[in-house]
Length: 263
Length: 294
Image (cartoon, rainbow over all chains, first blue to last red; front, side):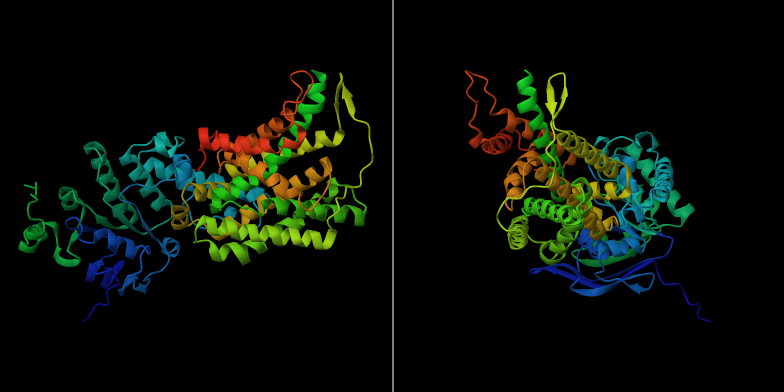
């Protein structure tokens, strides 16, 4: 008997991207199962960030398709994907610098009737109530991210790691069910890193949010991810658990010169 | 001292209030759409003339004709955006600037076509000024200052308290990030035009009320408005309002006879003040007083 499996949260098939003569991605296929935390690793220049950009609709692929829960979303505009529940964070956090932390979150909530016409002063009471509910939601997300005490601080006052958390918060505010994290650990101190890892694991466990994580900190990947895909020179060279991938000779070769600090 | 207040300070405040209204809109447009809207002055003139048409043909007061001014500038701005700016949204700011210059010429041609080149005046009774302890001020000037302050306050509420305002600030901080964060950018752009068009319509009526209406009235205040917006830090509406007041005061006070009864600057050269402020700002503090976007 064949069980009809649900489509994976995200599937990438045959994605190719060239920049001039340089092949950044060469027929890459991978899957992110629903409810998983999946890792995407590989040496610098492997094409990980290009793949992220293509999945999130920032770059069109030359060939290949991206499916979100079975639906073809190839080259769909980023804000459409956002509305469908796919959000991303950036390697270097990008926040609205002249807004407060809580405002940064509030702006990411979908379906904001106050942004549209009729003008805000026509339905003031309703908008005020929506606004309060939205602020309360943003504050509860900040609570969850351990940032509640910074709610009214300007976004620029946060540390790099805290900014990464705000980006994650923005993804949560949008109601995203699939979140792409671009190097959540880069440049983050150890203490905050552990906190970020716990938050990601908790969101995955409690809210069923699916994550695809680019990360160079392989310890973190080993801790968080149930499955890992390894890219090198634009191709998938290995997949499996972190333990399996680590022992793959091709992966070792791709990472030649890098040592795995794992015991 | 009284003469200074009556003939320099108060007129400077009135002019400053008008500049502030026009510059705030410019700054808002720059913030959300990132281009220098050269048709702003002619949009102002269009608003003034439509208010003039409404108040003369319907026999209503100038104040009551402000909605008619806005009823002309809002669709004009939205149509110009849809036809001429939206298709160029992704091109260089200079292209949009030139395109808005074209829109400015079109609007001015419309005004010439319907109203002719001769200056006209709002129908208004000649009333003696109000006198408080020797300070003489026309009632209409009080209303202009209060009206501009009210507009600035409303704008502040919109920007700081509403989602629309937050979305506008988000777009002015990082338009791409705003777009991917799900901000309805098209709607925010429309709303920005509507707000700027209302502000500039009010500015047009006020300017016409202060002096008279002529087809180039808007173009004449455009430079001062840009100077005010840049002085306050372009893209920062509050800064633009402040810059407008400073500029209005500077222009009027520049002719004050400080030494030997001769004006500091011949009134003919008054409009050069805006140039000087503009150049000085760009040289000394290009980001503006309140740290704008350039």
